[in-house]
Structure formats: C-alpha cells, structure tokens
Length: 274
Image (cartoon, rainbow, N blue to C red; front, side, top):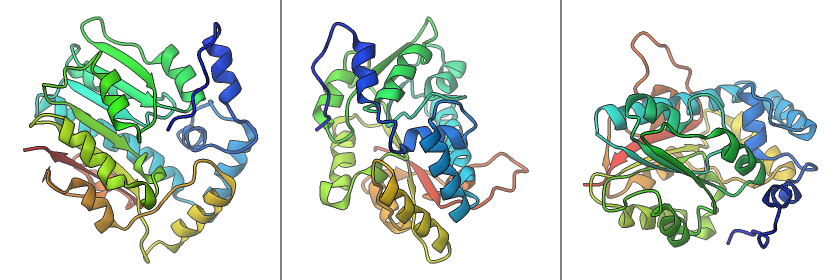
C-alpha cells in the first residue's frame, strides 16, 4: 500500500518531508537523462554511472517519451480516445500525455497517478489542462487498483473507453506482487474499446550491459526494478487485440517515415480491449 502520511495544514511541507535526497530515485534520474533540471546531485552521479555501464541508456528515456507521443496521437486521432489514466507519470517534461492529447482534442480528460512526492509537487504546478478538458493528479500506487479506479472516476467516465498508460512503471512491481494480475484487474474494470499502452525494460543476451546497469541500480537506487524478457512483456497484453507492430523496441513502434530508430532495451506496445 502507498505510505502516505496523514494530511496536514501544509500539504507542500508534507510532500517535502517525503522526498529522500540521500538516495538516487528513478523519476529524477529519468528527468536528468531527458535534459531536465529536477534532480539532485545524488541522482546525477548515479545517472552518470549507469550511463558509463550502458552508454545508450539516455536513448531509452527519449525513446520512451517519443513512444508515448506516437501512441497518444494514434489513440486520439485514429481510435477516438478522449480519456487517459496515466499511472507512474514521472516528472513533467515536454509533451506530457495531456499536452499531446489536448493538442488534437482539447476536450480530452487525463488523470495522472504517482506516489513520488517530487513528481506530485511538480505535477500539481505544471500539468494544467485546456479549458475544454480536464486534468487531475492522484497521490496513489499502481498496486492499489480499486483505490485508483475509484478516485479516477471523479474525473473520468469509466463507462466509456479509457487509455491506460503504464510507461516504465510495471518494472517496479516484482514477480511476487502479481504484476500481470494488477494490469488485468485494471483492464477488466474498463469497457470495451479501452486500450493499454505499456513499456518495460527488457533483459536479453544481446545486451548484457543492460543487466549490469540494472544490478547497479538495484544496489544503490530506489525503487528496485524487475527486468523481463520480451516474451514476458508481451504477456501483459494477453486477452487484448495487439496493434501492429506488436511489442517491440519503443523506438520501432510506428516511427516517423524516414527515421532509422536505434534499438533500445525498452519495449512497448498498444493493445485494444475487444
């Protein structure tokens, strides 16, 4: 369960007390790799060390962000989706889900979910909405499926299709925590026509340096992550209609014509609930 302190008269101070500046944190390192400024020295040092172990790691962050943009544009323009439940938001950067969606359909509604205090502090300040739509932010944990859905229902109409966005977040759910069951419970609660957009770090013999970087992270950073094979990542889409080109390197999911994407060990896909 999410360890959230009791509400106080100063929510900002409550958030600040939850920020651990002594250990590197994945959301802040991701922000560092993306060229942002919302990180601490401990995050920069860890991020640089991971990049030494795996020099192309920064490409993962960019590939995942571009994958998000392409997936959201497809869902809005081609699938008619106007509602998004984005769990594991990460620190705000360019082209967040609501910005991409509302650029095409200003009436789109987006609920962001994260339990990192630094993410929440920035999200509440930066993730605004177009006047025609609505954006909300929940301090909640992916594992608390029923609580997330209940609170998201204040903004989203869960009787109509929703895009469930799980980019780089299921990696923090261990195999002993039933990650497939968590994703399945979300999708079972959403109506036909809903979509799952998911990305996940993979392990493969072709990229042993990825495993070394993950080992370093799990020794020094927080939260710990679990790698899975491409086949294991594809299992998250069981029971869904998997859109072409399937579960592939994020950089290779419908790239722009003329692009020559670099293969990265961050795989993603989009599936539709029939």
